[in-house]
Length: 229
Length: 155
Image 1: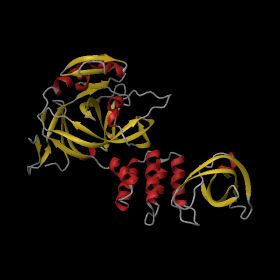
Image 2: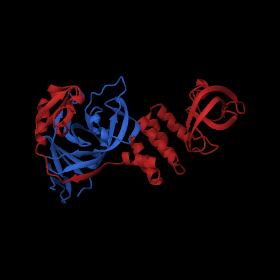
Image 3: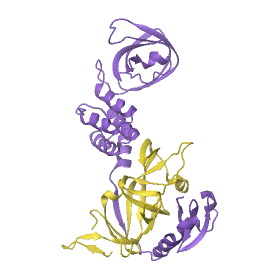
Image 4: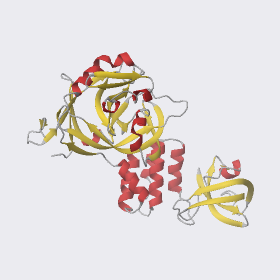
C-alpha cells in the first residue's frame, strides 16, 4: 500500500488529497464506499459529504478518473508535509494492517522523528497498541509527551503507559494472608470454573456467576477470583 | 518498616513477603506461581508472569472495579497464551500485600480484555513484567513458598 496524490470532489469543489493504493487498485475507487484511507492535508479532522471522487494514478498522470461515493466520508487527517506523501507513516500503517509487529518495529526504527508533530506521535502510539508493539507504544508516548508536554492526548498516553511507580505502605502486615493462601492451595481445584470468595481461610461462597458473589455478606472484604477450568 | 532481605552494603532488597501457592491456572500440567494481590482495591489472585505485559485483569473481575475504570487507552491488542485479545489499558493501583514487612503499592498499567462474542476467558489474572514487575525487586523461596518483594529505588 502506498500513498499517491488524488483529488476528491466535494460538491463543485475538487480538493487535493492522498489516497492509499491497495493491491494495484485504489480502495476508494474500488469499493466506491470506503474512503477512510483518504488523508487530508493539512492537520485536522474533517467530515465530508461527497457524491463523487476523482483521482489520478501514478501510472496515468494527468488522467482523472471519477466514481460515485454516495456516503459520508470522515477523514482523520494527519500531519502530512504538504505536497509530499508520508511514506514513512504509510509503511507503519502497512505493517499495522498486516498485524506484523516485527515489520512495524523495523519501520518505526527507520523513521525520522525530528520534524514530527504531536499528531504523528499519537498516531504512532495508537498503531503500536493496535498491532501489539507495546514497548514501542510506551517509548513514543513518553517521547511525544516530553516533546509536546501541553498536548493532553500525549499526556494521557504517557501517564497510562509509564513505567510502574512503587510506594511502600506503612500499614501493619496482614497475618491472615497465609490462611487465604492455604485455602487456595488446598481447595481451589475443587471449584474449577467457578467464582469463589474467601476470607481468612474460609470460603464465603461460590458461583459460576460473578454477580452472585456480590450478594454474599462481606464479599467486598474477601479475596475474589475465578478458578480456571 | 523492616528490610527482610538486604544487600551486603545494607541497601534494602525486599521490604515485604507473602505466601504463594502453585496452581495449574491456565494450562494442563503447567504449574503457575499464584499470589494474592489487590487490583483497584479488590483482593484477588494473580499469576506471576515474567514473560508477559502489564497487569492483566480477568474481564469479569473488572465488573467489580467499574467505578475506577475511567478514561482508558482503547483499541489495544495483546496476545495472551497464543490468543489475541483486544481491550483497553488503564492506570490502576495494584497492591502486593505483606504478611511480614510492608505492603507495596504499584501504580501499574492494567489491561482489561473486551471479549468478542466468539471468545471466552478461561485464564487467570496476570502480573506481567512490562508495566508491573519491571520496577520491583522480587525473589522466591520455593522451600517455604514465599514471594519476597521490594520497590526499586525505595529506601
